[in-house]
Length: 237
Image (cartoon, rainbow, N blue to C red; front, side, top):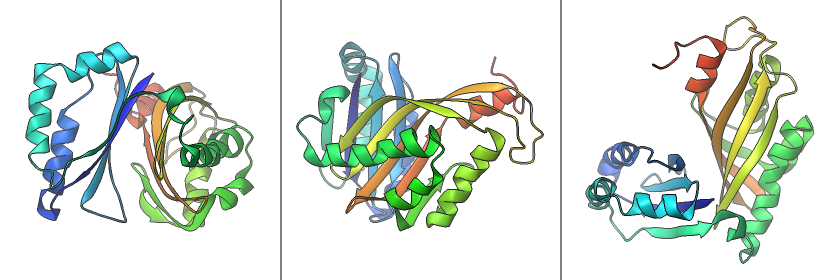
């Protein structure tokens, strides 16, 4: 498993253009996912996260003329040189990073305890009181109550859902987690009646930490796949 994180800066008037260009890079063969995150603390700052199956997949993507041309177009919008953590083996990434180890241990509690052990009380231990939450279904919100509500949405629709952590990548105050979510829909979900269907969904969560607490959280799961598996959206051809 290989991955990259790039921290980039741009002008306020170019942020939407840069995000659009980053998304246009798409998903290359052997690439597990690509995410673009905008930080609350600095709206002119983006984090570009990419995860690959292997070193070879990473290098094949890096050497693709099409991807290179798109990246050159995107980098023209940077106001400074990107800060890269590039091409590192994810499992070894934390070995030489004490901050990464501490932050990863905190974030793992979300998956190991809050979700898999259904220990909702742990939320108040690992999240800051004013945590900023970015969720594609629920939108942006803030605070512990909002996060409890987000978890409650899924706990109601998918009781006893379970998650497997596939890979973790950490840099500075950020931790990204690639995971596989398995759940059976036995409760109502966003106005839909229970289907009884079991879904398997891949996703990436990104957490920003300060003083041992998660202060910002992004959920980037494959919600379209989930809705297709539930029958709420047509299957892709």
